[in-house]
Image 1 (cartoon, helix red, strand yellow):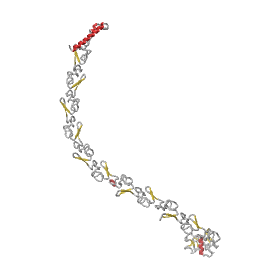
Image 2: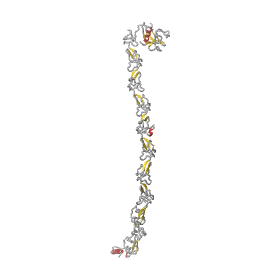
Image 3: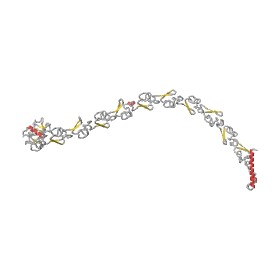
Image 4: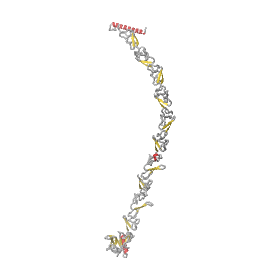
Length: 636
């Protein structure tokens, strides 16, 4: 018996038992049918191998997945025929059913699912309908695969999706792949591929990197290996390194200002091309010496150079006068200090002159500017004005300001400038004032030392003077040294001196001094001899004004003596002299006056020209232009 027959009998037996059970239940009254017995005979039973009108199939079982479902419906992907139903899958309908491994909806070969719905070699299929894909890496070339080298590695010519990679050719099964040299694609063990078959460009015709080159990219871009001491490609030099500023740049191009020759390259700088490079300390575009940059492009002593091209200037403050420092307004005194004649930019400062060997600066004396070692500068180079020819303050002076104003130092004992005196102090009233001028009434002498003394005879009583009567005549009460003479008293300024009557000394106008001032003893209280001759009298002016002088003479006196006494009664004893060239040899007047105008004189004889006639009498006091009348005359 077949498996299908056994399944059917099994199902039939079960149905029979169900029928018997139902019948028993009905007979026992426990189950009613609701229909008559005839309906039971028409009941559709799926799985009974009987194909009823309501069944699409009945394969004698209710097992699913065999083409006829447990409800006797034809399952998708199956065809069922006959009674009992025989079911078979439909290969090519897109439904994987039964023994089908795949079903891609067609029965075409070589698409992964064969016409028998089996998976073809080199494929894998999944899903319903089946989607089939080639199995890349199995060494079998199927489907859309352009190669299959038995692996899924990339970079070996056949990709992990079994397509020929760019730059490769693949053939055979399993595929063997080789690179395509000179196609511009770097593949496999190619060191480079620059897309051409030109040698000497870095990538050889066999796609290997040539010596001295490095290649990168695809297609390859090749450049010389700068720094390997080989000159290749566009390199214009290669000095075995990639250091800059040695003549050959890091990209092996000759740097500006250099010449390079040989392999490896030897580079030397070009002096005089405006480019300071290499060991050049400067390059000013020429090879002339003396401009700061010499013929070998080294900075000359005393210069500094900077910039490109080099600009050179003298080093200020090194004491070397170079370049424009030799101009009349420039200098270099060996330092950068201002205020010493040469400033921090080596420019000559106002008021200075510089020169000599060694080079130095000195202030210009006499320009009114106090600079450097100058202690003064009064705008001239003269001496004896406080600031000397070397602009040093002279002894006895003090100077301030600019230009200097100098003043003498009063009180230092030195007579300078406009000082008239200097007595080592500034005290007033000692002859030399606080401003060192001679005070009125004083005189000063300077040898051996500066000392001041009162001027005797000027009417001013100063210093040690006891008097000053406007003269230096002796015997008038105030001596030639302005000291009060014995027997005199002096008052006022200028001094008025009078004899001391009664001291026993006959002085001045005194005609007697009997040691007392008692009258009636021959010498009166004014020390005038009391006159025993009544012929004496008082002198009067011609206008009748009393002259305040009495005179007296003796009867035995000569006319000449009488004239003298009359004069002395007016001017004082010893003050009268015969006037030379007078009207007569007996004409008397004040000593030293000589009978000039405005003098008073006496003569004993008639006036030669008859002055004051007819009133004139012998003994009249006569002055030019007027006549005097005397009470009593010289004659008895």
